[in-house]
Length: 152
Image (cartoon, rainbow, N blue to C red):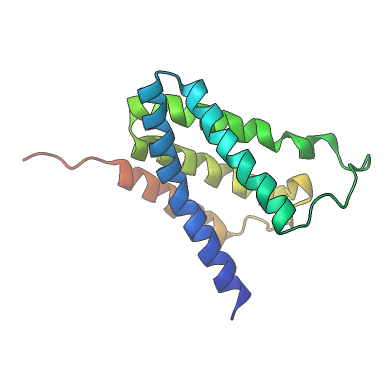
């Protein structure tokens, strides 16, 4: 099977899960009256699954922390926790579609910058006219999805 199709399918399913996770955690935060507590519940569940995956699939520790790894590679969790806390707090007030659409808009902006400059050792994919047009169309799509029909 074509690896591009496999990877695209996996990431499509992962993308489907983001608004579901946002809606579930936002609802939990409302029921518990605490976005922070709902986030801790989510992270505890994620930790249990990550540890199980680590031991069952990867067989447990086999490498040591490497001093040659740049310090900023360890900061991904800060962005994750910021996302989870903010989506849990904002989504009930702003709406799941609005919240996730603006997250998507931020992702589009970040991805094009990371790819263009090869930040964090990512492969470089420069901004071509075709890519720029694609990003503009995707951004327009975000705003079209968020637009509300006019009552007549």
